[in-house]
Image 1 (tube, rainbow, N blue to C red):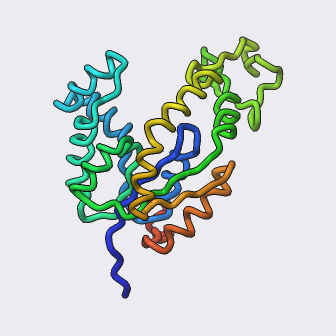
Image 2: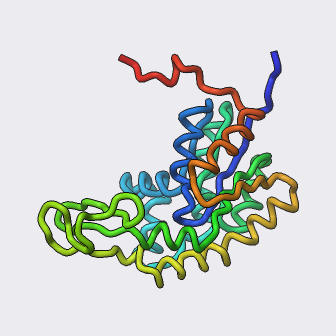
Image 3: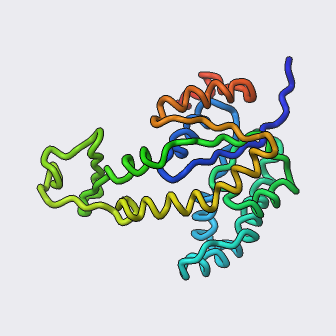
Length: 227
């Protein structure tokens, strides 16, 4: 029996690159723990932990949460996962965060979803919602019957601020400025694996095949829902 070293992985990709979908598929197919910085932050805000209270002061002022706060939050949680393979999502986002993480554990795999910005802009700006019900339409694969109108109420659809072209462009530029140095940091360490494409369903098989060389797959019995 081959004894595999515990996987210490990070998944990266711009907003709208399909990171959430790929992460959920990784969790479904492989025996590992998935730790999302966004989920962890929301949990700490809700429970009003010490870190949550500090983080809220920055969020309320519309500021980025400092590196040391995010690092403290994530490293504290990772202490509970030392016996498992794990995948980090949303952390590290800056080189200081990556360096602080390295002092605690060596990252051996960084999965980078390399999706062209034009594809992401097209994908995100195609999303429209009906404010009253929260119904979501996508002009590409789930369009309303009549342009700009909800199928049921016939009320006008709106585009969330986050999905407006100018906002999407701004978010993608901010991601590139903040994250390119992190990708370079991991590339220089020889642990960066980039998967390029314009569709999640085409990128996923490549990620899956790559992880099969590193991780035990979840058996069908384990994957099946318990009755």
